[in-house]
Image 1 (tube, rainbow, N blue to C red):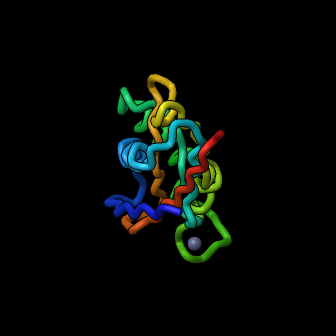
Image 2 (cartoon, rainbow, N blue to C red; image 1 turned 90 degrees about the vertical axis):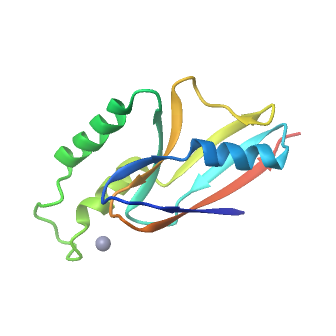
Amino acid sequence: MEIISISTKRRIEFIDITGKIEEIVKNKNIKSGVCFLFVPHTTCGLTINENADPSVRKDIIEKLEQLVPESDVYTHSEGNADSHIKSTLTGHSLVVFIENGSLQLGTWQGIYLCEFDGPRTRQIWMKITASL
Ligand code: ZN
C-alpha cells in the first residue's frame, strides 16, 4: 500500500491530487489494473469532478456550506459536526481503472482530496492491483 501525505491549508478546500496519483501509477509500470484510493479520516473525503474550470469546485464548496453550515445546531460537541457530515456526503474511497499505464479519467475529470476540517496533514491510502 502506498501512503500519500497531503498538508491542507484551509478549513475547507478541494486539492487536486490527480498528478500525484498518476505519477505513482506510471512508476508501477502496470499496463492494466485498478487503483483504489481511501482516506482514513472522518472529516475529509475524496471525489472526482471537473478539473478544467475552477468555478465548479468553488460552487461545490459553497453549496456544501449552504447545505451543512459550520454554525448550526448539532449534537457533536467538538465543533466540527459539519465537517463529519460533509465527509459522509463525498465519501472516503474511489476506484479508478488503469489502462496502458495511466488512470482512466474522463476528459474533464480530476481526483480531489476534500478537506472539511483543515488545516491538517491527511493521508491517502492507495492500492493498485494488476489485471491479467
Ligand atoms: Zn468531530
